[in-house]
Length: 64
Image (tube, rainbow, N blue to C red; front, top):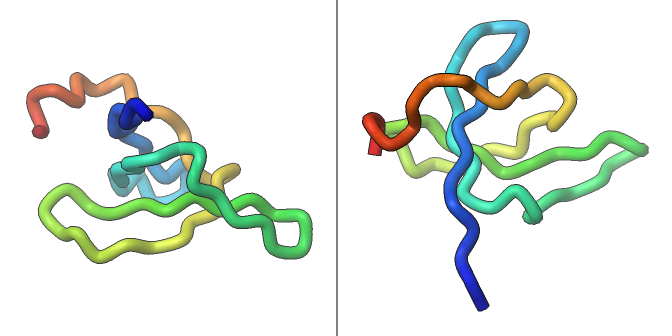
């Protein structure tokens, strides 16, 4: 089993940056897909709508 690489997302509504450790970890509620994300210096996990997130073009290796 190989571990997926974290992906940096930006919330298109608030411009906040979120990190997703495993893009395959999803939940579907009433036809809406959610992924588990957290902030850069906070490991508290949230379920956020996948359609409100956009992959960030920022260099993620500098953050980690």
